Amino acid sequence: MNRFAFRLTSFGLSDIGHIRKNNEDVFHSLKELGFFALADGMGGHNAGEVAAKEAVKFVSASVEELFASSKKDWNIFDLSSFNKICIENANSWVHHLGNKKKAYSGMGTTLCTLLFHERSLIYGHVGDSRIYRFR
Image (tube, one colour):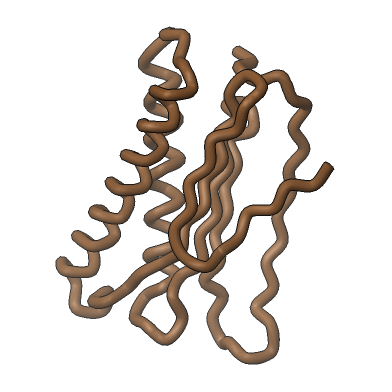
């Protein structure tokens, strides 16, 4: 099922750099669905790497479930709303985990999502991670 009119190529690379001791970057692609996500846990706070991993896992699973459970022809407005709700729910999930375990208290993450649809791109963005478009 190819819902988008673009040829997609993706890759990811993360570098811990010279300052941090812990890499809190997470990225995931569901290329066949045209979905991509990345997160960068908040350094200086508890369990940023956990927050990033859980946020990306949550939004990715939500997208997989949406397209596996429905053969509906989605329009851009429905998918845009879905993307927003996914991000809000991922935030609630990370917050819930932070309240559940003392070691996770105060954890947080940035989150960027991309969802290709026909000739359009739906994106979501929270925090200071960036999305670039190269032509």
